[in-house]
Image (cartoon, rainbow, N blue to C red):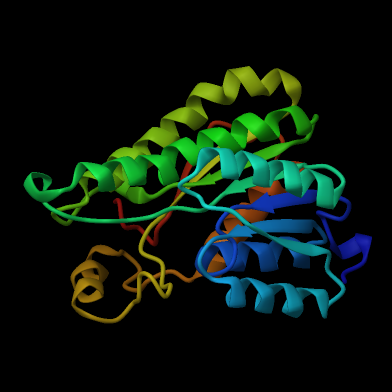
Length: 251
């Protein structure tokens, strides 16, 4: 593991929801590389979760995987409690778990609407609510939203946009409540990022790529770097920000 001199997050403890793959896994890797002890949740990918734990423990990092259903707010709250117990406290919360589903409004099932609200909004609220009592001065809350809160260039993603706009609003609404406690809260809104659930190949990617100013999809590490920046001790004057990391997608 890195020494204190090159580990800005040494001594800090973080929870990343949905951390077994994609942006979540990249964030877990980056935070541990920066010296943090990290717990992460997973739901349907136990092998990927264990592989990530094994990979990072081999470097000397302190890391823990916690199984939790992101559609169950009580399970998410319990995962926060478990992270606090296993890490000995909590300094950084990264709300990353999310789900995207698209369909025209006439055919979008109400049960799927409810599920997206449960995962993308209610679980974020539950995690923040349970984490705040543990986050002292210098605490960080970082939620992964989406640029679709601001721009929806394809048909069928109105519900997804709604959920991501909701968490951006939650961030802004909590700024003055948490600021006096020394806790910052920010939203990162990724643009198109290449993951197994959102590949940078195929017809859909070909449709989006011309809308990205830099002409290519981002990588999970691009978002993880932004998370690490906001988690840094020197980022204490940054709060209430909605930060688009999108290669110029919304311009």
